[in-house]
Image (cartoon, rainbow, N blue to C red):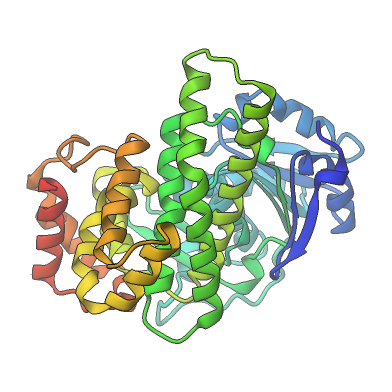
Amino acid sequence: MSTASAIHTYQFPTMIHFGAGARSRLLAQVKALGLQRPLVVSDRDIAQLPWFPTLIDSLADLPVTTFSGVWGNPVVSQVEAGLAAFKDHEADGIVAVGGGAPMDVAKAIALMAHHPGHLFDYEDGRPDARPVDQPIPPILAIPTTAGTGSEVGRSTVISDDATHAKKIMFDPQLLPQVVLADPELLLGLPAKITAATGMDALTHLIEAFLAKGFHPICDGIALEGLHLVAIHLKDCVTFAQRLAAGESLSEAEQAAHLTARGGMLNASMMGAIAFQKGLGVTHSCAHALSTVCDTHHGLANAMMLPAAMRFNLPAEPAKFLRMAQTVQPGATSGKAFIEWILALRQAIGIPDTLTDLGISTKATDQLVGVAMQDGCHPMNPRPVTEADFHALYQDAFAA
């Protein structure tokens, strides 16, 4: 484990401890939050990793229990099982460890710990939504992927078990109080997951920058995050591929891998901070793919991003040029940015088309129906009609 001298602390507004070995601060930070009986929420894969028991052992001073019944796109039944674990343990706070799924489940557990009714009674934007007016237990987050940035977000996205429809619950109190962003925990992430989650972060950054409205702070964060993705994502995937092939990395390469993972961790958090401005049509299409086809969210974004950007380019040519020059300083047109996205996707192993992903064109009508109802596309810089959604999916099937 790395020394604490390599760890940086900054706040925006979540207190973030970033650097190799940041997880060593877990016990101190749990105690600083006043927690005495934490529940650790993770997923079934993370719970099997060799470093996970060591992390739990670091909390040995406290009565602690673990809930790891999370997998795939999180659903209400997982939240209900985690809530039962929270109450059985008489927990007073949550340590969320993992990617977007356990982060979302942890937030939903925290929301429902002291609130009555069903989780979806608190859906954001619902006219008759119940008020979030009871205490929400503190959350400490330890991300193990660089994609959703949920560790610095104020919402949770949970699907209905039966329909797979995604619902968003939002409240500022769902923002974790502390993040331990430790790039060492990402070093063993497989190439495919690295690529898909990285494309999720990229999509957040792009759509936040393009979203309607005036928010220069989010715009600046989005562009710097985009710069970090351009520098680091391909390297992260390449190192993961080499490790999977059984190659040994030199000491310098190991340091470069750690730097790349750290860069993507920050890019991911910056994407989640920036998209408080809004998202767009890529996410509406991707949410439909996750709902109808159970496609991994990051991969769904990666599949739809080129088609969505081709659609949006005429509406914001100046912004596309800025993004192009961020990733390629010599770029002279916004079209170069779309070409960069296509080249990046190919370099990190993202399939070319929805057909390559095994999705049938027969699903198009259902996909369009779900996408039309999604809450992201109203912030898209170009209005999106039902016919536009059909054309976007057609583009993604044929690209």
